[in-house]
Image (cartoon, rainbow, N blue to C red; front, side):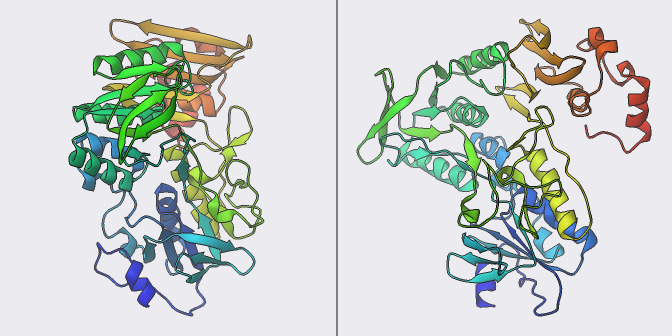
Length: 448
């Protein structure tokens, strides 16, 4: 009981739920983000008495990681990023062991070992450890003032550092979504930001050239310097960061560096086990690994990409929730399948709402592109077709009906009969085939 009290979530003044040796199913969830929460909710729908233990190396209750840039910018309070109310764990009879890392997993004896040596046994295990930032091999990366920015602790450290050293200039390494949202937040704190991207344009994985150029112009308007086709080769400084040196020899003076070149599935826990892994943990359509009673969900796992058919990590928030939900159902003994997903990002950059989904900039004669562009209003719409079906889309500024397009992609609807109307302002449900509308309205509906 001493260990339980030491690590139980301190914000709620309750003792941890412990049923003892009752014969109830023991569920252990490693990780405490959206996939974990979804699993807890799914388990409790069908098993009100089983023992659920959530373990995380972070000392916080579940929070929304996509919101930390908004908190840095001052758009929302830090309290606003928490994902469920303060009584969530108590109401769902969940024991929390927070602020300590799980260091190993014994798949045969069914227990995990904590950093302090304690062993937690399970009947069913969910691995939802998420992703970890990629750390580039740059000389000087260990200097004070070099950060990644994916967790609440990163927010706290960056904010404290900015205040302590009165940072006036910063370099963001990486021109993807995390890097650009962080750069935007820093500019709102009156910090001059230089974005350095190795590719020939920002958002090269997410957008095509036209969409990337719209966002780049907007970043420049708010004061960001955007450097593409280059990278940081060295970070300079004595006690802390003072400058970076680019590959071409250019020097940029700065007081802080944010490394935002991407994330990779955090698979440390399954090393030295028989759990199969590619880039992420491999699972079946019940989110179960090749080891019975051990599941994985969220950014740490791979799922079927509904466009290409291959398995890959698809690290997006809605995907993690759906996977956690499916895992929770199956852990509780209720069969439920996860059929796959598509890459999709919905994010606001420089006050411009954007959506991208599927293949946005493919190469090959088999693809057909339909576009609408209004330079004055910065409105851009792009549909990518392969044969009779949509396989990708981009929407900049006007993102109305994004859910309809998403479901046209997922359900592989033949759009040839209404293709010429697909980007018109009046395009909507009435434009779709009758049988599709009937399914949408009278059935369980599509997720929009």
